[in-house]
Image 1 (cartoon, one colour):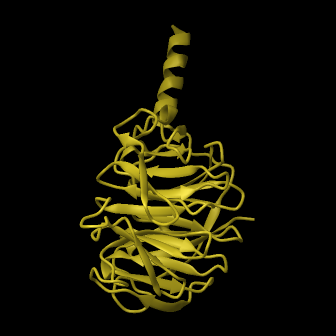
Image 2: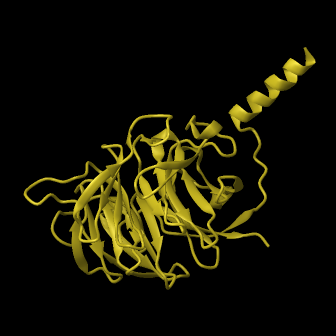
Image 3: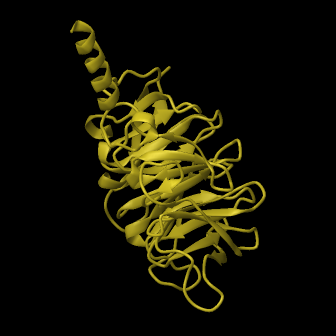
Length: 313
């Protein structure tokens, strides 16, 4: 009988993810922004990327623009306004840099990806069909691999759409569904891992999936066995909206409804949880980016700001 109780307790602990101990800790450094439409103010910021020189780029979704900041968080410039013409934006979501240094911006309400240089000059669109319409239904994020292939998280189609370096549509990766490997449920972001695989924020499956460039699922992280069962414990997610990877291969996940960011090892083990308290507390984070010094920048959607965390020494 005693063995049964021990086994039952172990199973409940695994399912609940009750352990919150981690090997690393971070502290809140500062916050940038508040609700508004002026410089360094935000209305529902969604995504963030850091270029090779350390400049920060934030998709200010409610203001339909991109804002650029110095590596210390000082405002530099903003571009974009609501519309559908070149250079105009409609609900920009996650942003990402290609190896050539251009910025890829997924536009949720324009059903396209728009490409800019680092000062905001329009370069091209991705995803618009030759005659009329789009390959997307509310794209959430885009990433470009070392060969120039473009991968887009297509929210309502529950797929990753793949394009060649010229922007021509190639194929769809994944399929709509729950639980099983390769199934996606409202994906919101995609990143190219340092090993060339894809890291997909399978948001409403409450997990992260690692895939080959051909769409074969290699690993899944999120709850028991990566099944995507939502939870509040370590290694569990409640809507995994944004994803980033640092220079060492560690993975950072914006855990939206848990108001935190979880840091995972390349094998998927949780090594830190960034949640904050007081003025540094997170509220519905949507994205995360890590600079070359290991500082963690978080899009704090619910507080209309971005925040900086540094590792404790």
